Image (cartoon, rainbow, N blue to C red):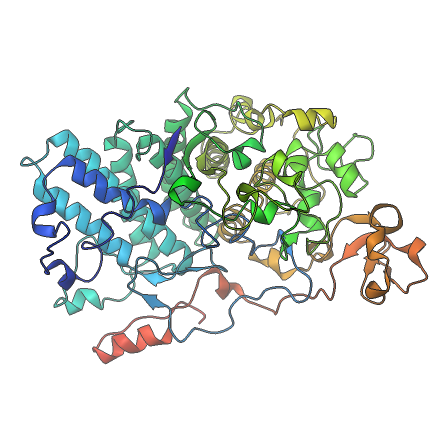
Length: 608
């Protein structure tokens, strides 16, 4: 298991990543570019400067960028009271940055228009090249070139996922090279072919171990490569109808996943909750890489606090997400033989669903949630016992210290099985039962923790090709096997990085139009029996439920007995209409004007 801390990460943040003229200033107190590139240890130190940008974990303090729960809440899985969050409706005035600390774009789950990290990767590669056969041996050169190319591929994968076509740079551009500096966007396929080459090099040349559990290695890199190649392979299939490129990228996703899966050091030996709330993930065999937090050195976060039952979750899990959880007999609820599988209140869903439901959500309605279904996934069992406070520092404010999984085995095997299933639809080898057993069923066979066992929670039955569910709610254009693999991702990654990116690459952004009424509802609640604290004068004309027949009942103060049904978040309404242009982000008008001012053209994203 690979971890990293922040003791070294900021040491070399100065001097190498800003504008080129900064590199020309000699420093009296720090290493400069002329004397820095002398040893492998300095290469490692420079590489550590990338970690805070790419291996975010729970981020730090109250920062939300790329952090689960706090940052990844814009998707069809979550609903808030009032009007739903909108996609942007016009190109922004500005979207450019040259800063390494540029903010991400929440509604695109990726970076802004910023090439600082591309430049930093290219600078790293050029300095490594200059050291070849002088300060470093061939094997050292190959490893560190792979590290630099991995980070370049990582950054371009994110930029392409947000903007599509972007300018591609494979060298540091000088301030005088206007034709390069102001080049127009290259096609995403050209860019991703370059990324593909970088990632192949990484798999062929990066070390399986760099001698310290803190450092990037082939297995960590392979996990991320499987993520990015699955994304691009399915984008090419569903968005661009490019079968050749889809096969190419999906094949690499399978290969990268297999690198990780072939390592017996990784296995499903942990219960689900312990992956997210543990104070020490060092011995967890499902974790490929994690970020460690330590109050003693001032590295803490706030994600657990927003899972502690007290802090609010305004964007909260909706009925549609809850319904997607498979029952413990392995069937979607409309096909399940489990008793009470069709009763969609929290208690019955905890008892009848896959164990991840109980491990992800609190077992009773909570007013702190916009839908009354509260996610407590990112805190350990002890933390929720402190509700309603006072909380010890590890469970309150921005002083949380539970470790964050950065890359875990479940994602790798789900990337692997999905890529294989997609390749099968493109003429590749059919998925066999052994493939499902090594992926979906290995996940379902995780151990249960003592709390879940005490509640009577059962493991979910395996997914088998012989009894593959044909969910009546399945999209007609999605094969049953791929539908079930997608369901597995949805259950596994609630509030993590995947959902918005998944529905984009599947060309399913219409899920966010909320034409399904379940997207704007909470679970079934019997208010007189389960939640009498809301049957008060303040809720008159505000509290509403929806009956099975679609009838909406509003609380009047005298009809408490009738307040039984699917909870309707207060004043809930749909987001503004949007079109397919929101699959990709526009660039800023300022950036287009800057190009024009220099005599060049920067093309706007299609549709904007």
